[in-house]
Length: 317
Image 1 (tube, rainbow, N blue to C red):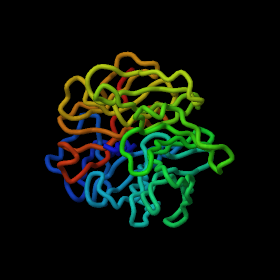
Image 2: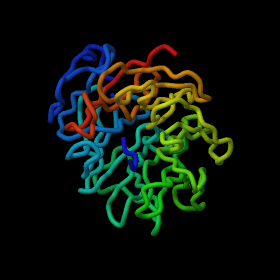
Image 3: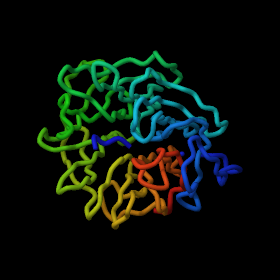
């Protein structure tokens, strides 16, 4: 999770293998949850599914939670094979959700390399150094990108250079044939947009009344409406594969640390997915609709060695 603020085979789905460095109190977040045995060091964050559901893209922060440098890796859920995708010594960070496009077979991410944060793309079978920059603006930074279903557009969070607040959700056609399009007001603080696989909606979080809530907007910027309410921050939202539900991370219900929840795309009663005393965040829904991948730690990730990646079964809904 980054706010300017995992399918193991059935035969091993209950196996818990520690990552290095270890997380204290290796407590599984839920009876139906499995930790992924990723043999790397650092903090593993922001899992995003491959279109066929066989692999996970994730960010490895080398020095701890949200502490750069950060590389992108792909983990094969069937074989356990691990492949480095992007690494250049800067912060290369993907967003959970629609970061991996089935049509173009490409992956979109943010990089903090010079001159400042911009959006980059790499082919799913690429190697470090083969990525290319998509956005290039002198006075604005770009974070948290996701693809449109056809892979021709990206939506992302834009900020004036060196300004932390006032995030604007922007849409941009790859290749630059159209100008940047603001989907949210310049006066709001909106972040972490994710495009629905159905192509009709974008979900994002908006800061208001001292907390983050989830909003949905049409892809032309019309009909923006809030879908969560009540106390607690709701962040890291992305869609179910049918586009009817949203998965997100929240400390709603007076939780000490965030858990994973789902809610209908039009709003309503949320359903808690993870039952855990620690933190769970940055969720992504599997393409077949059966699993949710997420990052987790026994305590506040800012106070620990970081997070590891888990899978949990989607509850009846």
